[in-house]
Length: 401
Ligand SMILES: *[C@@H]1O[C@H](CO)[C@@H](O)[C@H](O)[C@H]1NC(C)=O
Ligand SMILES: *[C@@H]1O[C@H](CO)[C@@H](O)[C@H](O)[C@H]1NC(C)=O
Ligand SMILES: *[C@@H]1O[C@H](CO)[C@@H](O)[C@H](O)[C@H]1NC(C)=O
Ligand SMILES: *[C@@H]1O[C@H](CO)[C@@H](O)[C@H](O)[C@H]1NC(C)=O
Ligand SMILES: *[C@@H]1O[C@H](CO)[C@@H](O)[C@H](O)[C@H]1NC(C)=O
Ligand SMILES: *[C@@H]1O[C@H](CO)[C@@H](O)[C@H](O)[C@H]1NC(C)=O
Ligand SMILES: *[C@@H]1O[C@H](CO)[C@@H](O)[C@H](O)[C@H]1NC(C)=O
Ligand SMILES: *[C@@H]1O[C@H](CO)[C@@H](O)[C@H](O)[C@H]1NC(C)=O
Image (tube, rainbow, N blue to C red; front, side, top):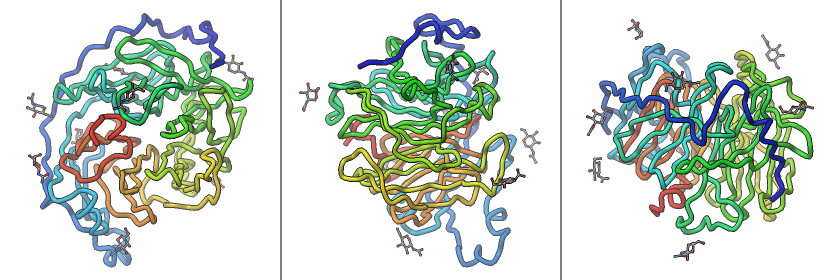
């Protein structure tokens, strides 16, 4: 694999790295939790809502500066019967005074931990990687990895030659690095156990990406599909963009790279359907330098053509009623989950809104665990346990099929 990898560019004037920067202090901060049980699944009366614009704001409330309420809102019986099931319960795990839980949410089996990126603060306080230890009651610590400058989304990464099919090959973490004023934006792979890192991609035919945002690996072809948006520029840590907002497909065996979709305001999260026939792409154009609710907060669906290389039949899958859809994952029934302005929203494959895991503040991403889902809302970490839904990548990532 031929990759452009100039170590000087990744030296990062404002950060000094060892192999793995020694972990920042472990935080053992737990809060009193609110337990929501089956009886707390709140049915939404859509016909009442249809003629009452205040219906939803009267249904559930939280204190946005200290959110502690989590609610399971059922818009359709499928949510209660098939998605959550009768045994689901929800609670808050962490409530911090900084934003440790922003994006990514990728499980690594060697460390039995979930890797989450924190929210950006400043070039002097760059994005952390928050490590959630599943073997120690969801305790967290912060770390940083060499070559990873300002990470956002990510996924598990099986390098060419490794086998994704049976879960025996431990994958590497793949970070979408938004870059900064010195560092290229691109894809960086890390072995979180050893701290070994490798830049997988950092340019498009010599052109710079703007801020690579999120990525998925096609389970059959091994290609990396990823989005590039302008958030590093909007957050003042990247130069003005010099390339459109596009979805790319990169073949890590040959180095071939191609644009597969464009025409977005800000393409952001992306996800395959479990049958690999559909690609979902979120557009978070409603949030750029500031919020502008006349721009997209929309999930587009595309047909993945039989060549598994190109897309067709772009269509609007869903427009969200709160905030914008950011991180997106499918479950094995083909339901589509996205982090939105008030928590997670879940749609059936035909685009019917089935329900919400409501936390009253923005969730940018989340992570399926076997029988569970971790919900990130920046300063808070939440969990819904005992769910029926199975994340699309649970079998591969956890070896629990
Ligand atoms: C909301 O939370 C903040 C921060 O904990 C607190 O200062 C404030 O009093 C709360 N507001 C209400 C109405 O409870
Ligand atoms: C519930 O969702 C299904 C799609 O999964 C849809 O066919 C059905 O019409 C919905 N029911 C209601 C009452 O909206
Ligand atoms: C329900 O949840 C409890 C506690 O998490 C668990 O012990 C039990 O096995 C679950 N029952 C079903 C039917 O999933
Ligand atoms: C795990 O953390 C929860 C709070 O999230 C706490 O209530 C519980 O006591 C902890 N359990 C153990 C075994 O430490
Ligand atoms: C990184 O983590 C430390 C605590 O471990 C926190 O004080 C700091 O603000 C974090 N920075 C970011 C950008 O999340
Ligand atoms: C799983 O994949 C690994 C790595 O390719 C291979 O060595 C092993 O034989 C496979 N195991 C099974 C049960 O297919
Ligand atoms: C591309 O990014 C590199 C690394 O940040 C930078 O040195 C270079 O000037 C950029 N090129 C253009 C044309 O913006
Ligand atoms: C919001 O976005 C629309 C569409 O891009 C634009 O026409 C309008 O001027 C924007 N409004 C504000 C207040 O920036």
